Amino acid sequence: MPAPILTKAQMRAWEETTWATGRTETEVIRQVGQRVAQKALELTTPGATVLILAGAGHNGDDARAAREFLSERTVEFLEVVDPATALKGLEMKLSPAPALIIDGLFGIGLNRAIDGDWAALVERVNQTRLPVLAIDVPSGLDADTGQPLGTAIKAAVTLTVGAVKRGLLLENAWKHTGRIEVAADVGLSPAPENAELSWTLPGDFRHYPPPREAASHKGSYGHLAIVAGSLGYHGAAVLAARGAQRACPGLITLHTQETVYHPVAAQLQSVMVAPLQTDSKLQGSWTGLLIGPGLAAIGMSEQMILLTRLLWRDSTLPVVVDASAIDWLPSNVVLRNQLRIITPHPGEAARILRTTPQGVQANRLDAVRHISRQFGNAWVVLKGHQTVIGRSTGELWVNSSGNPSLAQGGSGDVLAGFIAGLLAQPELQQDVLSALRYAVWEHGAAADRLTARRRNWIIDELPDELGAM
Image (cartoon, one colour):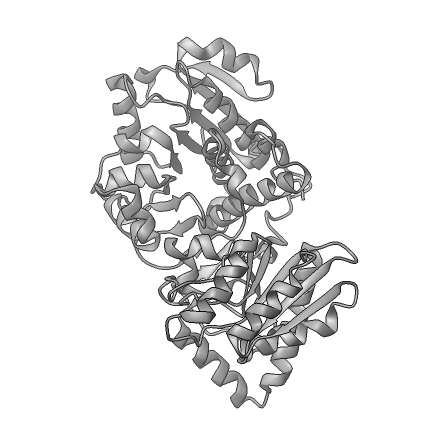
């Protein structure tokens, strides 16, 4: 089940609903402690030292509960009541340095600025540059606004409890939260309905894509046409095609500029490659289209721009548009149930909305709504940290996978190809949202698996990792 994304008030209401069923806070705290300990074990090696900082509130109770489940680690514990005393104790606990610090100082109930000795304690933790596992929210961070209340812990991982707190999705919070993970099943009552905003969890795709029929053939899984690649950018076409292959459509034909036909064709085998003929209107027995990867932003022919606009407006097929081709799309076109997807990064989104990338990042959820509305309720995949998927109305989904190693040229080309490869398949077109969510999640999860093996992997390796679960 996906995790809801809630405000502090909504989270409090969920907790009150749970207590009304007869379940006790003690029971839930123990389960939270177990999940915290489990994550601490994943982040450390046997025999390593884990330092627990436990404040006076329930966040501290969660940290205390974790001690029971850390028998395989050397545990140092610091009860934090008086910050001046705790600061002295912290210095003693830092020599030798622990492998991990568990932050249980403050939770979502903090409603005042951290200052004085409390601020000094938080800053000293940050100065250590040691990995920190924050429970629920990094101590000092406002869970609704994402703003530090004076100062806040900078965590490597935030294990948020039950639901993702809405403020953790805001740009101001990112340097404090690190990677966000969810302790989803900790004994709370069933999650409240939240149709608007949800967080993707790995288990959401346990049975996706669905198994194929035994008596099927390549014609059962569609024929994707890709329009990609130009002089100086032929690699983007190759990466998009390789990403599409990992989605396993029946056939793929890549239409590329004549100037790069030979280097593109030489790198692909099962993908058919053809010189692009813009005057043909891309006629063929396709079941899906991808336009954009590696098409030069400057100097593209008027015929190519016109072809993109015509296909966007008139094609009855699913059309995915990426990269510079997004800038060529006609806005305010009424789409009649045609499937349309655009995949902008923050810079491209800023050009659409006539703002700055910083303006997009300040409210990524609203950006998705406005872009979709501008393009006839098209699906939008707003790429970047915590990729957002949605349309002008209805559900918005925030992706949980991926890491900074995806910040390499070609990453978006692989994703665009993977999305289009899935949506060229007639069966998967019946549930567009699942296909988009899976594509984005698996793209990030593939990067996570690569990073776990080798930190300096390159984008050429990413397509081979897609689906290798």
